[in-house]
Length: 74
Length: 375
Picture 1: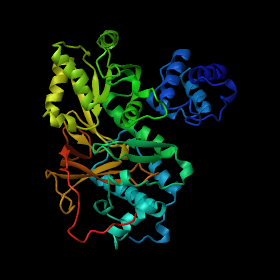
Picture 2: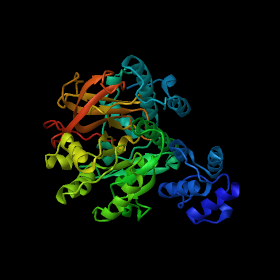
Picture 3: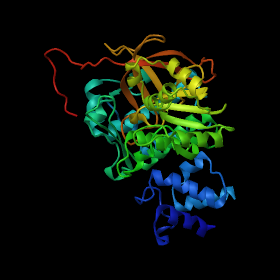
Picture 4: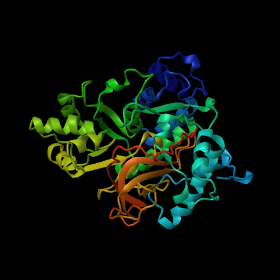
């Protein structure tokens, strides 16, 4: 699961997988801005065939958090 | 204003109080519950900003020499919104700046600069979510944005319009920007989207003038009708200034949406970049509503006395959300009327009001004894 979430980060933001670690936070890199955030949500929803709720969209503030949130829907 | 040591509010205590805010129903509190709750938060914020923002301290010291603490809600000092155009006000260490919101505002030339730390930005999103969900429901639904995605071309420089759209886009899915870069309607794309999604609810978001100009006017001029289905909801904001110039009322605006697009649920919101998050949303009965963590006070534009319900005056807005900058109590340049409290036909508690327009352009001046106050 972790690798699949990481792969979405890599693809969506166009960044190398080495920097997608638990501590990677929203807005800490220019590629993860508020525009890209919505794209990330779409990528994750498509990849896992889930529907993420509004509050989880807002709460997804780090890679670690993203894994926890995706896990909730599986 | 004099604050003693014990009044100094540590940011942790303040945040603890703010984190207790009820996010489930933003319109749950009656006047008797809300008054002590908001008074406590407003005093904490006033004290916090007084101790951490020198510009705010200088301003409030000049205007409130001997106010006792804690203050009544009515006595919380209010900054003119213009202050954020003229001064860079921040109550945290500069290293905490997470993002800066800019607004050109109606007055044009000068730009407001609102600095947010990550916690304040997130709190704004959560409160906006709590309010919006009260009107469109919990689920993220197919969304049409009455704007152009060209707004996001230069990602490093997003304007207030783009920021507003992004703030609301979390409530939607399958986002469709229905205008091209010149704000012409993408008719084919729109019809295709509607055909696909109209059996369920569709969320439409846009700025009032753009919705009028690019959607409604298109349908009127070309004598076409669109079918947005039975469950669509439009949320729009950004001000009526341009429509007032064309003498278009809220009633006509809604009627046109109903007649030409089949949209029956329409909510205007009143909000400003200086208080992002705690917006005032229009209910089914046509009134703007104060959520639990925000308030409006109507003041006499000549002497700033508080006016009773049903009297038009200048709008003061209070919000519990601004921690990183002293924007918790602001005097707007808009005129409005509070019509009542806790008893709106829609069932939501709190004050409900309407906005009638902007103050006539006037500079507040005395005669010869003007002096510049250094902030």
